[in-house]
Image (tube, rainbow, N blue to C red; front, top):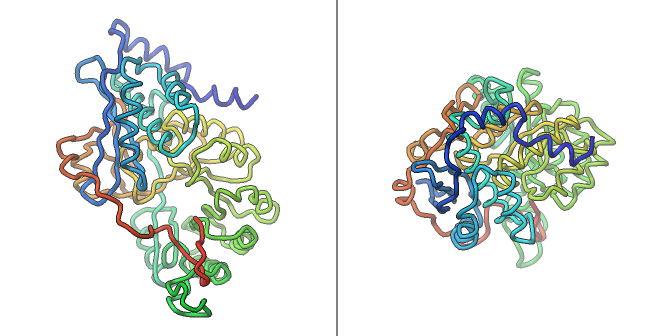
Length: 433
């Protein structure tokens, strides 16, 4: 089977297409009448952008997630000024064709902003198709392959005991998978402000040291395994802070602790080093949070260099792209672990949920809780109970947006200065993610 065949296999399942035709027989042909952006802070300093596609059928519309924490205003403008005029008049039933047309229209492909808009458009079209057929999207994708979607929780702490306590708390709530960090990203390797040798007059803030990190993190997981046993499945996020050689070393040192996976151990520029990691250790690897291009994920999956793909559905092209990635994963024994993160939104979470329910290569999904105002603004937002994510059986994605409420919480400008991703070494140099 060729790679092209694999990607074609991820299209609308053949068994479902006749059912959709039967459900919509006799209905007039649809066209896109309007495409609008709905930006909002979500009542909680989020940078959310939703795309709404209104059709020629009165009351029939779909919504999708184009959220981008760092470029929300740019995404909003792209929808309003560039994509909306192009999409009006097109047939929303032709999801693959509209997706490819919108993608190639830009000539240059796979930019972050472009993928955000494509993802939102794709989700909205699946939402419309499901509503028109009277079916949830997961049924259009082939039906449920599981009863609910298992999630992993995020446990942090200032020291090993506090991390242990927080892991136990999630275990008591029903989580079987818990990601453990110690002092956030880079924690265990952070040198306090002003300590150790520094350049005169240079950077004096908290600094990352990868040797300290690679010593501290295996000790953390040794402690957790000795105290918690094998019942809990443990994860850890390196957040791309390591040089390739030290990434290989950390992967080797973590092997005795039977990790469920280690996430983003390398920056995306150095993913070729996964070949060395695979040669020396069986520690499962997850990668892809920063990926936007097939040339990033296809080699890692097809060469079986990772165990979990960690893309965000709203950064790769939406449900259609996620299905194609899942088809590739299934053939090569890789599992999905779609990335959520604290800046994510309920629409993207539900899009990932529908794909999760319908694929056999699902691995795990990242948990994300939303404040009450988000549930009010976006009725149909998923519920998290006992370590599982639950959507609903409503047609389409099963979520709506209260635009009047959304506009009461406009986007806020990003504050000046460095972002939370900025980490520096003792010499003042930038440490990537």
